[in-house]
Amino acid sequence: LKYKRRVYKMLNLDERQLKALHTRANLRRFIECINSGQVEKIAKMCAKGLDPNFHCQETGETPLTIATGTKKPNKLLIALVNGGALLDYRTRDGATALHRAVERDSLEAVSTLLELGASPNYRDAKGLTPVYLSVTRKTDPKVSEVLLHDHATLGIQDSQGWQEVHQACRNGLVHHLEHLLFYGADMDGQNASGNTPLHVCAVNNQEACARMLLFRGANRGALNYANQTPYQVAVIAGNLELAEMIQNYKSEDIGK
Image (cartoon, rainbow, N blue to C red):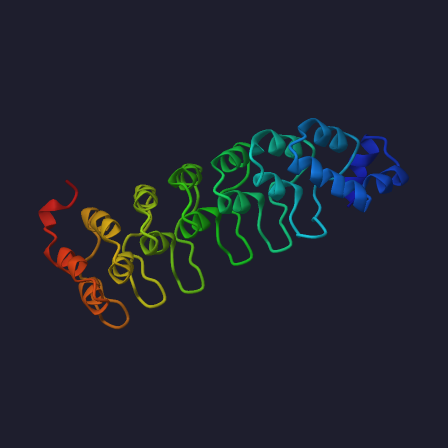
């Protein structure tokens, strides 16, 4: 607040004017301007001293997170950040604008936020990063790639020890998996049950992802905590074609 007071002093605003700016009705009007894409009005309100770091009374969202859900978020996000919106300001449930942009599968919003200086490694309330959400939400693979290109950290785990690669394999996201492996994800990492990504493919009958892992040299003999190999897991799950493919994959095929 001290910082804000200092900024407001520079703008020559007195406390009374500020109170008048930050009425509920005014904040609601500000959110309406975002939803209807009125970039100039937003810039004007911020220039008058309106602080764009607040929560919508009804939804708990912030102006930035609301902007990520619009059809053309680019100019809105720039106007808000230029008007003082903090990139890591969170919604009531702990998400940043970058998390919301990924959840909404908006490549434009993700790219804009990164260009404005957002970190790809912000964590949400569950400790998950935007790139993690990109593989659980089955987003456009380009969304994952943009985040990874911006040095997103890999190897984040959920409460079950699932990393990004496990999630990509569960959901059959071959392009995401390719990006993850290219950027150095651990293809033999184990979750809380000791399952590697290849085990996850075996259970969920994800042949394309299994091929990609084998092609990259994933360990076929890895044991989970029930002492089962991916081949055995595939048999138990009744995915016999996949089991056969895992068993008969030729090592000379690897890396070709």
